[in-house]
Amino acid sequence: MATDIEASLRVVAIGGGTGLAALLRALKPNAIREKRPWRITGVVAVSDDGGSSGRLREEFGVIPPGDLRNCLSALGIKGSILSDLLDYRFQSDGALGGHSLGNLMLSAMADICGSWVAAIRQLSDVLVTVGNLYPASLVPVTLLAEDALGKKYQGESSINKCTPPLKKLWLEPLDAEPIPEVVLAILNADLIILAPGSLYTSTVPNLLFKEIYTAIRQSSAPLIYVANLMTEQGESNGLTLEDHIEAIQSFGRVQLSAVLANNASLRASVLEKYEKEGGVQLFASDDAKIGVPIISRALLDSEADLARHHPNLLDTAIKDMLKQI
Image (cartoon, rainbow, N blue to C red; front, side, top):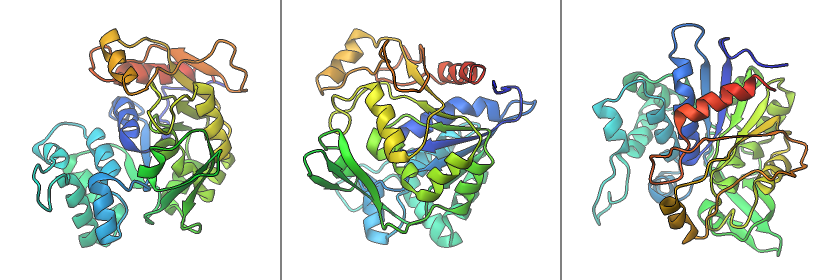
């Protein structure tokens, strides 16, 4: 039965990295429309161990704030000097070099409030954002993996350079739990969307929490995957779109309702940049027989110098998909 896109849908978007921020940016107009706005919840992975986030995580034992910061910016209704400050990155060779001011602000606010959920809510009020944003867990989990040859990888930074496909993928500590708000949002959702992003280190990690994949399986909401535009050198090198889908369903223990894939070609000059690093575009095969409907649409931002989803095209495509499933 098709979903009524004019209704006030409860939409849960799950992911990490820049992919979730891009998805939230595409969904945002539906949350600020005058009649029957959508209620959007973003669920952000907390296994990042690189860059500014990784340094803060190691020094203070906190969850990595970088992806939360990106998503807060994406949900802002209007630009402000504070939004610019969130994204400001210090350029120096000293202790602050490479740190994002937004990461420091979020970590400081969490310490002041005594709660990451309260800290995000406080900054959301100041930034004037829409929807709700939650870290998947309050535990700074570590992502671990094993490839087909038995080689083990520890941490996202290591898995980024793995030899795919992976045979095993799990989180430690094994008893880490998601926050209750995340599970409740999934159980009450009308639509659940897996954001594009690094396959093993952004899209799948949230699904490794037993409570999250169990809630998705118990939910009656459609589960959609917005597919990546490109493969990545390292963790998805050589993988097809069908391989991505199989990995999500296998590691995540979920059944996708549909997949939204891009069918537009990158400009030659942009594609050349990616090909030099071993990246190729992901397209659905005509003879794909994986038991999941794949809907292909033109989703590329043709003006961007990198492979990016166009927010308006992505929003329209999601709505068109909802009319079909």
